Amino acid sequence: MPHIVIVGGGLAAGTAAEKLRDEGFDGDITVVAAEQYTPYQRPPLSKGYLQGEEGADAVVLHPDDWYAQHRIGVRTGVAATSLEVAAHRVVLDDGSTLAYDSILLATGAQPRSLPLPGIALEGVTTLRRRDDADRLADALRSGGRRLVVIGAGWIGMEVAASARQLGNKVTVVDRDPVPLATALGAEMGAVFRALHEEHDTTVRTSAAIEAVTGDDRAQGVVVDGDEIPADLVVVGVGAVPDTALAETAGVRLLNGILTDSSMRTDAPDVFAAGDVANPYHPVVQRHLRSEHWDNAIKTGEVAARAMLGLRASHRSIPYFYTDQYDLGMELSGYAPLMSSADVVVRGDRDAREFIAFWVDDGTIVGGMNVNVWDVNESVQALIRSGARVDLDALRDPAVPLDSL
Ligand code: FAD
Image 1 (cartoon, protein in one colour):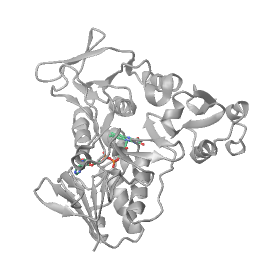
Image 2 (cartoon, rainbow, N blue to C red):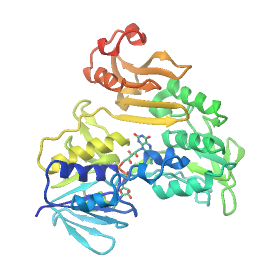
Image 3 (cartoon, helix red, strand yellow):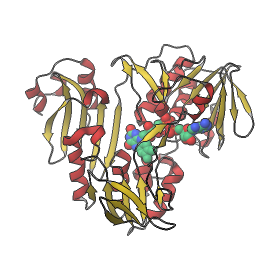
């Protein structure tokens, strides 16, 4: 009986396992997940789950009995420590070994560390895992705490919004001149700054973040020479792909695990998916690593098909979503092309009901719909077409997107 091993307990791992069965794979499947949970998804951890509005059901991918029903073995609380490519086997930290025919590395990413004095004090945390969210929720749910968020990226801004909605005092600090500067640029980053400031969050940008103060516990963050009092500090300064296992196998790495567009690495029968993978994207003709929910699903599915020898190519346009206060948005686009593009707005930016397009030499390379719904497919179609668009028509909400 052929045996496929999936290493990872996140969305890419869970999706790949499901896809293998959907495609009719009848062999053995084993999922090895280092955390104590069956595969789960992370977006609610900074939003509804943190706020207590959603429970574990919103997080887990499949109920426990689903795995037995689909003959999928799950080893939770066990990490794979070494991958022996030539022998086709993987060693686990409980001392056991699994032989495989194909293996999927879906080991995700780890929060980036910040080399700052005081960063190891109690009360300073990152948010990646369900246990992190549980601890943070315990601290924030009763309200009245002073939270400093270091890093105005997606996770930082979502935690800030959740904490504020739970009645805490929140300050966000970032070295960049606007929140979400890397993802969105100055103009759209300003939309999120205004949203948070309207909700009484202090947003300090272009900030020199110098230290976390305190004896055993964090009691403040020093920014531009001022000490901002803090009961709790959340550090959200990005994530780095978790390549520890791949490194033991000598798999080719560059900003994650390099794969072709079918998520195949350079080692025989070794595949990668999700945040850890850096696949070649045939549309933009470069490797494109993406740390988003949709990417974990799409690449997990592509890898599953490729492991079965089916036609598989990852060509999706990167897609991301966020919810902060009453702002919901979807963002589609190729980040490396968006960074040098012009922003064209269609709709009412001040009312936060608009679509922003990133336009590079007359063609659309990215689009973000903010509190405007059911347009994502049209936005993606415009990006995919690569056709030059009339900018006046693009700005005009009366012109249907599908007619551009
Ligand atoms: P992960 O979810 O990181 O899972 C990898 C798993 O593998 C981990 O459980 C890890 O413990 C395990 N593992 C690692 N090494 C080993 C090993 N050697 N042996 C066994 N197991 C191992 N994206 C969006 O598009 N929208 C959002 O709103 C959004 N919100 C987010 C909020 C938070 C708080 C976070 C952290 C992420 C968010 N994301 C969001 C990003 C999205 O969740 C990730 O892109 C997605 O989780 C990636 O899935 P993955 O399966 O590749 O990796």
